[in-house]
Length: 221
Ligand SMILES: Cc1ncc(C[n+]2csc(CCO)c2C)c(N)n1
Image (cartoon, rainbow, N blue to C red; front, top):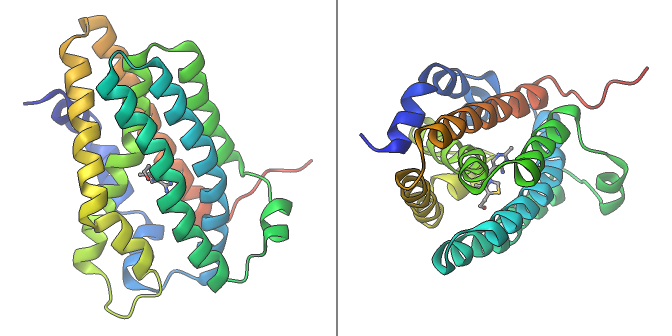
């Protein structure tokens, strides 16, 4: 079994819970309320900015030229691909630049991005890489699962096609290979921290969807 297979097996229960979340079930059925998806997309745009920055920090920390190139390209792709998707849905749901600017990140969004930035500042490269992986891998798994069950006339088709598509799958495969290469050169102690970072970032993915489903923002006194 590869190291990344171990990561998935160790978090199998959480991964199953994510697959069964009402947000993802309703998205597949096409019955997710537009207002819920609108809130999700705004938060996801905030997330994306933070995530792309973290990818760029990971690129700067990478041990060799190949990994620098892969992570820096991913940072650029993240902005290009996801921004296109966000612009599409923001147009559809009437989110203006002013609406977006007026809506700050939710607690879940801020918590996830802060966690990743914390690993970038305080962790080592293997730990940071393991924290970055769930964003790619879980979206790929969920995208594929949803694609097989999705209603044909689904308003969220562009979202589904992005994550179920071959271009994205190729990016996921490269990320898995880099994690396995990195874990292969790491000590048992470092591999244990990679496991913890992968599990924590996977929990953040669950929390992000849970927050979007409940339309939570930032609690005010
Ligand atoms: C909360 C949240 N987690 C993961 C993704 C997916 N994603 C965002 S950036 C990126 C890198 C390549 O484009 C990927 C896979 C998302 N959109 N929102």
